[in-house]
Length: 335
Figure 1 (cartoon, one colour):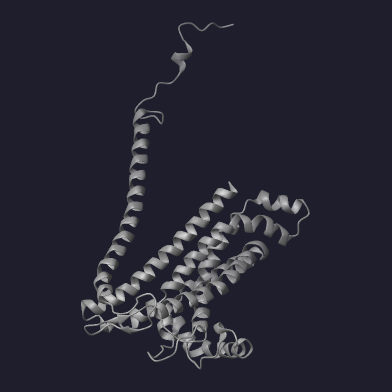
Figure 2 (cartoon, helix red, strand yellow):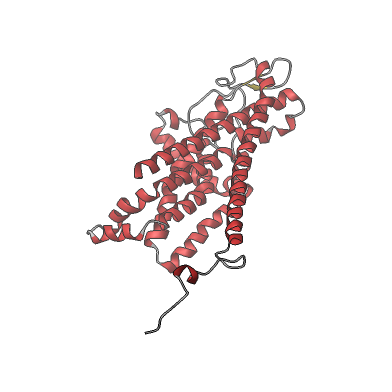
């Protein structure tokens, strides 16, 4: 048996050198990289917060002088006369048209988008799921102006019989009362917006559903669940935060859509009586600003339109904040 002399365990341990993977220079470089990456990530997050804050401050700064000279109730008046020494303008009609059309869009787009996402991820074979996902995603690449032209020239004729049916059967209810508007109604705007935001809901929901742990699905099936029961107990609970996020992102898109709505909407004359009907015309915040951009010839007029834009900014911010709260509570509950 050979004897080892003069060598200890410590002597056999390789000594790190500056060029080895265990060397101090490599570790130092890694720590420096972590610090740089952390600083860049923090700076990017701070930049986004700063930009949003600056936009809000700019809108508020430009809107306050016009609001101070406004002779009507900004939140409850339908008037919009921003010229002269005594401007009178309010946003109640703009707010109703914007919110109502966006809610119609979400009521139509979210169920359909979630259903398409479930079909692509849970039912369709591989040879069909990828082309189907690509076709849905192509809707997001269609410009807004194309949706507007298509809605006015082609799609309007297909929706008109539906509106007539609802007015004849449910006209006794204020939301479906007859108005005599034959052009772009709030209901029609909502349908077009639903088609526009459908790719957002579908794409994000599809990605979330595809990440459902296989063990969860296989466990449900092993216990005797049908495919739908597996989806209801495993896939949908796992993907609920993602669906909420997708819905809120799509809602933000619907609230701020401009070009398509500008092409479609039937603008009401100032003398038209107020109506809660979804078959009435009107203007959204974005379409009112776009249609009257030529009136930005004085700080007072510009400030009135910026005040309307400020309300849209706050509305979108509140929607996203509520979505974030819901998602965080859902995560805390599941954990």
